[in-house]
Image (cartoon, rainbow, N blue to C red):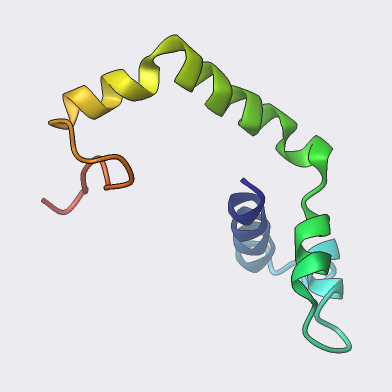
Length: 83
């Protein structure tokens, strides 16, 4: 979940030409450590998306999506827009 947050933050900053974005500050002097990148996505920042994932899992929605996609093996993509 943290990786998704980081990628979204980079995408937002890039699209909006926001070189002052807090995430970019990590790269000013030298490449950040994994720990620094990990801590950039705070627990508060990922709490709602993480809860949504839990609700989708607990409600059976993820399993239903797998069935609709033809029951691919766990870990396999559910499909592609380019099929």
